[in-house]
Image: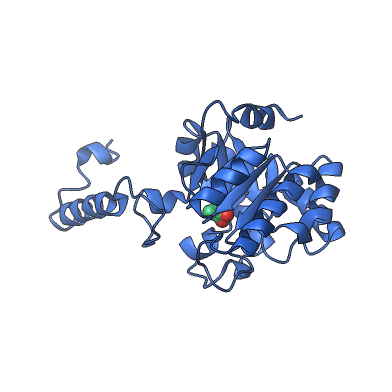
Length: 259
Ligand code: KIV
C-alpha cells in the first residue's frame, strides 16, 4: 500500500487528519508543509470559474490545475476529484482515472456517491487506484444543498453507503454537510477515516476550500471559518503599488538596470 495512504489510515482514532483544497502550485506549496492531504477539488468550478455547478468542470481543466498543484505537493497525499460524467461506469472510470494518474501523478482519486458507484470503486481499487469516497451533499448531482441526515431513512441510507464504500476498498470518505449525530455514528462504524466538511468535529479529519479559509472567495457557508481576509491584504499592496507608480516612486534605481 502507498506509504502516504497508510499514514492517513494510521491516524484513525489517534490524531486528526488535516486537509485543504488547492488549485495551483504556489498555494499547494504552503499547504504541503501543514496538511496530511491536499485535494484538487472540482469546487474550482465555482471558486475560480464562476460556474453555477461543478457539472461544468471538465477532466482537462482538472488535469491542468492538478499538474500545477503536483509541483507544490511533496509530502502530503494529493487527491484528484473526478469531475461529473467521467465515471459513469467502471470502464469509463478506469480509463479516465488511469489518464489522470499518468498526467498528474496524483496519489488517489475522489468520487461522489454511495451504493450506485460501488462497482466503479471496486474496479478502480482492483486496478490499484486508491479511492476516496464522498457522501452527504453531492455537489455534482444534488439539486438542493441542504444538510443530510434530518430524516431516519436518509440517515440509514448514508450510513449504509459509507459501509459499502469501505467494503469496496475506499481508503477514506468525505462527509459533506452531515448532521452531527450521524457523522459520529458513521465515524465510529468505519475503520477507515472520515473527513468532514460541515459535518462537525466528530469526523477523523477536516477539509475546507482554501479560498474560503483565507477570504479570497465570497462564500458565506455556515461551516466555513475565515481565518484571514487575504483579499484586503492584496488590495492594500496593489493600492500602494499604484500610488508609487503614479508618483514615480517605483521603480527606483534599485529596481533598474544601470551600466
Ligand atoms: O470539490 C471540493 O473541493 C470538494 C471538497 C469540498 C470536499 O469536494
